[in-house]
Image (tube, rainbow, N blue to C red; front, side):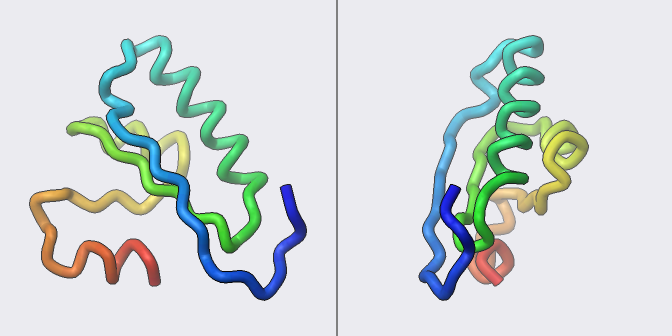
Length: 79
């Protein structure tokens, strides 16, 4: 990846992680972790899924926001 610099944030959005089967999901989460860990600070990741946020927190050490809590969701994600 590029070296961090004074750049505007860019976003990668991956939707519907819950569509994977359990084995494929675990493989995908491990691969995503490597990608996210190696990403520059200006590259932000948004992953969407249904109710298995505990797995995302475990694998990715990520902030999890319930979509039902839509008031202020963008402010919390992009601070």
